[in-house]
Structures are given as structure tokens and as C-alpha cells.
Amino acid sequence: MRKGVNPNNHKTINAKSISHRVIIPVYIPNFEGYFKDSLNVFKVCVESLLKTINSDTVISIISNASCKEVNNYIYSLKQDNKIDRAIFNKENVGKMNAIIAETRASFEKFITYSDADVFFDKGWLKQTYTMFKNVPNAGFISMNPTPQNYGYSESTLLSNLNILFFQNKKTEEVCSRKDLIHFHKSIGKPEEFTVQMLESKILTLENHNYIMGAGHFCCTIKKTPTLNFVPMENSNKFASGGSEALYLDIPFNKTGLLKLSSPKSYVWHMGNVLEKDWTLTKLDEISTFKEDDFSFDSLPSAKANLILRIIPYRIRLKIIGFLKKVKFIKLK
Image (tube, rainbow, N blue to C red; front, side):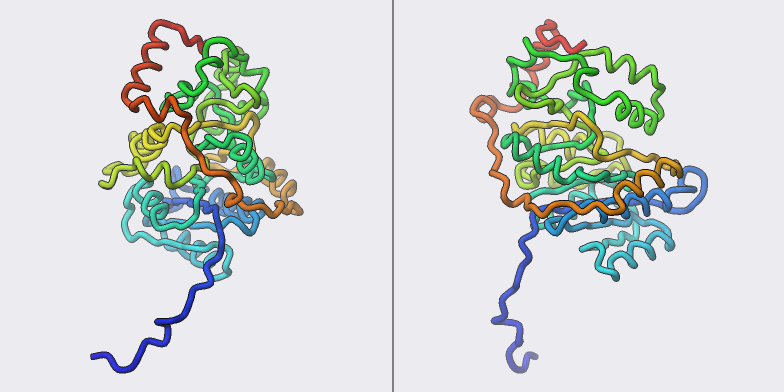
């Protein structure tokens, strides 16, 4: 039975005009073996993020059945109003299920996905904004250089056929050697791997040294175009296992927008063991940093070029596959 009138019925909401959200899923079940140093790494990740964002950015952290100590830390961040949303999953629902659910629940037009072991350097937010501003038909941007990462970038390649045929550059002309060595070391690659990559070819946009292709350990997307192609059913993968491709890479590739990465590192992959000297130096460098006030809402809407709007996605894949097979596209 209802008595009276709900006093909130005619109230209006003073909604904040926020246009960018960072979503970080974290799974730290204990502090043994692989996870021994993970909470320390995660705390540095959050600290660096809080120091390098502006008022147009809010943060969601998703605990995928992490242990009590980790959940207490996340709860304290919410209590101190340092993050906007804290989600605690009783069971690990899988990385992609967690972040896609939070993406669908968010109002912001731009979403940054980040692993829990990322160090956010000063200027990463402004560089992301600037790349979207300079390339209106971009829709997926990584702040870490990823040469030759052309997987699921067929739409990007097809939008720039003249560059594919005539304007390849050497990686060393574009990317910072130091940045690449640090990144490859963090994922267990030897320095020889970096040297070989620096000597190979790379594809960049015509008017910018923005690299075609990108990884997704930390990336920013235009939300709505990508969600239009994300499967409605849940992923059955615990962590990776191809789930990033199915729920992020392929849906984005279908949008026809460009997938790009920065020629230098503005975010750093730390891994599961904290390098204390490096970390202290980097934290000191951002200790007094204050990002400019700007809004992603001011960026123009993105639309794929006419060719990609006409050509069906499957045909795009076949065209690029054919060009690679007959070696019209030379990437080495």
C-alpha cells in the first residue's frame, strides 16, 4: 500500500557533464607466487592515475573476486571520493564481462580501459585528447607505441592505402628506442626483440607520426560505435583466451574508425613485480603535475570514411588479406 506522494517525483537531477571514464578491473586473490607484489603495483597504478587526470575524468574500479585486503583498499578509495564507482564481484566474472558491463552502465562518451599494472605518466590524458582531436575519424587510441601491431586493424589499413603502398617508414625514425625496450622488457621480451623491431618497417598516418594499430593493455575508445558491435552474450573466458579480440578488437574494427598508437610512451606496463627505483623516480616526476582543464565532450563526432561505410566488413578483411598475400603491402 502506498500513502502520500514520493517527494522525489518532481525533482530534477543536476547531472555532471563528464565525458571520459577510466575502467580498471583487478584480480588479486592472494599475495602468493605471481601475486606477491600485485597490491603494491596496483596502488602505484591508482596513485599515478589520480595525479594525471583532470575534472573531466572519473574512475571505476572493478574487483573481480579479489582478496579482502585489496577490496578494503578499493573501498577506502571510494570512501575518500577518489574514485567514482567501486564494483565488487563475489566471483570472478572474467575480465571482458566486467569491463563491458561497466561500459554499458556508463554515460561517458570516451572510455579508457586499463590493466591494474599500468603507470600513468604526465600528459597521457592530453596526448589522448590531442590525437582524437587531430584525427577525427580515430576511435581507438593507445598511449604506448606498438609497432607492427596490425592485428584487427584492417579498417585502419584500408583507410590509408596510399601509405601502405608508398610511405612506409623505419620504426627507429618514429619510436623511442628507450620506450620500446622498457615495454618489451616488462612483457618478458629480450632487447634483441626490440632491436629487430626498430630495423623493420612501420606504418604511420600521413600528417602525423601516429602509428597504425594498437594494443589494449591501456587504450581509450569512443564508446558508442564500439558497443554497437559487441556481442550481447557473455564471454566464457576467465582472462584473455581471445576474449579481448571478440569483445573489443573485432567490434572496434567493424566501426571503420582508425586504431592508432602514440610514438612514445605516456603509459607504462609495470608487470607483477614493482621496480622500486624506477617507480620512485616516476612518482617524483608527477608529484607536482597538474593536467590542464579540457573536456573530451568538445571533440567532434567520428564517422568512418565513405569507402568503409560502403564496403561490408567481411570484404574489408578479404581485401587486406589478399594484399598481404600477394605482398602488395610490405611491412618488413
